[in-house]
Each structure stands twice: as structure tokens, then as C-alpha cells.
Length: 306
Ligand SMILES: Cc1cc2nc3c(=O)[nH]c(=O)nc-3n(C[C@H](O)[C@H](O)[C@H](O)COP(=O)(O)OP(=O)(O)OC[C@H]3O[C@@H](n4cnc5c(N)ncnc54)[C@H](O)[C@@H]3O)c2cc1C
Image 1 (cartoon, rainbow, N blue to C red):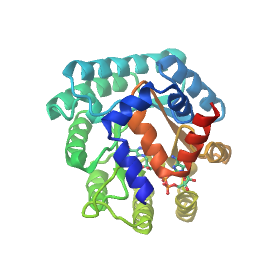
Image 2 (image 1 turned 90 degrees about the horizontal axis):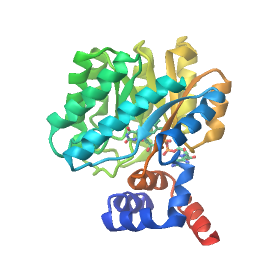
Image 3 (image 1 turned 135 degrees about the horizontal axis):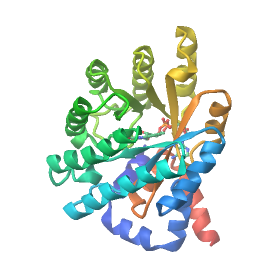
Image 4 (image 1 turned 180 degrees about the horizontal axis):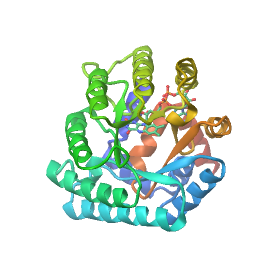
């Protein structure tokens, strides 16, 4: 718990970020979780995933962008990704973060930037998932999502909820009324106990409760987890309720539990892998270390090996 909080604190530490991104051995370690620095390397990684029966979600790493011009460059990058998905025929949608599109500058700017990407995706028959970030932006992220959803279809844009947040059950009830395509995950940020359940047991219980509500809703949702207990609970519930394998998808992160990704695809489940790439990998990478502090030893071992 302490290790997780420390790593999440360090994930927001600018000095360490500058050091880590300039330090070759540390950077090399990121290849386990990050597909590459550019779109073409990511296309290759997604082709390999498609070949073993997994679909993907393209993610250009960047968050808390503080210059308007940089947010516009993020939009151009996503338009290039969507075009490249069409040109190559890879099976992938895209995931975006609103702080990457300027949420920290002005929520209207973030909305307009996101809208440009969703409009292009909708025109191409693709889909945009709006990731969920820290609890300081939960409400505004939901508000912008609802605005986008009122202008675009169920299969054009979707949202994420986090089972560690106390508010999530109520948010899900409202989102199901819209209706909306939802990704449920546990949540990856450092949150105070007033807003997030501090005990893993409560986070897991809430996850199962939300997962059941999603599956029962009849809308196509994403069940994002590497936790075998959450996966078994999903498979059991779907079988018991006669919900088909095509009615939802499992989602996992690039480089995490590849064995389980392949197994679920082989068993006939829809399996989507979230594939991040880009130069701004530091906070994403640190959140992955925080999820499994044993990964820190893997990193240190490799740095000292050479
Ligand atoms: C597709 C996808 C999208 C996501 N989008 C968001 C989002 O928008 N917002 C957000 O806050 N969070 C997001 N997350 C992260 C999520 O909230 C969790 O932090 C993360 O998935 C770990 O939780 P878990 O369900 O795997 O369960 P945990 O209980 O954390 O882990 C269960 C088991 O999975 C394995 N595992 C988990 N993480 C790792 C790792 N990093 N390295 C190696 N093994 C690991 C371990 O075996 C561990 O015992 C996303 C996750 C996925 C899979």
C-alpha cells in the first residue's frame, strides 16, 4: 500500500520525470508496457495482437498538457492514427484523455478538441473511448462525455468508470440511462479515502457489482482487468444469465498478463488490448509499477544488468 502510494506520488514528480525520460536504461524498460515512440511501431504491435485474435485501442501517451498549441498537436496525432487504422486495416479503436486535450486549461477547449476526434472517428465508423483520470476531473469528464454522447451515437464514443470511487455506482445508473458504452476498471490514481475505497476488498466488490449491472444492461461494455477473480466473476455471471460471449469484451493493458489475453481470445471471448505509445510515457509507466510493486525489481535488475 505504501509502495503503491509512493510510486503514484513519484508518477507526478517533474524532476524524476526529467531524469527518467533522459536515462537510457530506464527508458529501455518501458518497452514492456509501451509499444514504441511512433504510430508505425504501434501499428506493428497491433498487427501482432490482431494475429492472435485480439483487437486493440490506440493510445497516444500524454496528459496534463498545458499549452493550447500542444493540445492541437494531440488532435492532429489522433487524426493521423484514425487515418492509419483505415489505411492498414488493423482492428483498433482509440482511447483519449481529456487533460491531453486541454482540460487543465479550459474545459471548452478540451470539449472542442475531443469533438474533432470523435467526429472523424464517427465518419470512419470507428470509436473513441474517453479514459477516466483523477477524481479532480471526474465530474467535468462525465459532463463533456455526455455532451459528446448527445451529439454522436452509442457506437461512436464511450466512457470509463473506476470501481474504487465511492460515486461510481450512482454514475453508472445515470450513464446506463443515456445509454452509454462503459469501460469498468478499478482505477489507477492516488485518491483520498473520502472519495475512493481504501480497501481492495471494497474496490473488488464494487467492481463485481458494476460489472453485473453492465452485462445485464444489454449494451456492449468493456470489462478491463487483469485480475483472475474479476474475470472468473464475469465469465460465471455471463454463463448463469445466458449472456453471450459477443455481448461484451475483456480489456487488458499492453504487456500485462499476455498469457491471459491469449487464453481468453482462444476461449472465444472478445479481447481488446490497450496499446500506448509516445514520448510522454513517464506517468503511465509509473502507474503500471504502482499496480505491481514487484515490477520495480524487474526494472532495477535490468538497469543494473546493463
Ligand atoms: C484496458 C484498460 C484500460 C484502463 N483505463 C483506465 C482508465 O481510463 N482510468 C484508470 O484510472 N485506470 C485505467 N486502467 C487501469 C486500472 O484502473 C487498474 O489500475 C489496472 O488495470 C490494475 O487493476 P486490475 O484490475 O488489473 O487488478 P489488480 O488487483 O490491480 O491486479 C490483479 C492482478 O493483475 C496483474 N497485474 C495488474 N497490473 C499489473 C501490472 N502493471 N504489471 C504486471 N501485472 C499486473 C497482477 O497479477 C495482479 O495480481 C485501465 C486498465 C485496463 C486494463
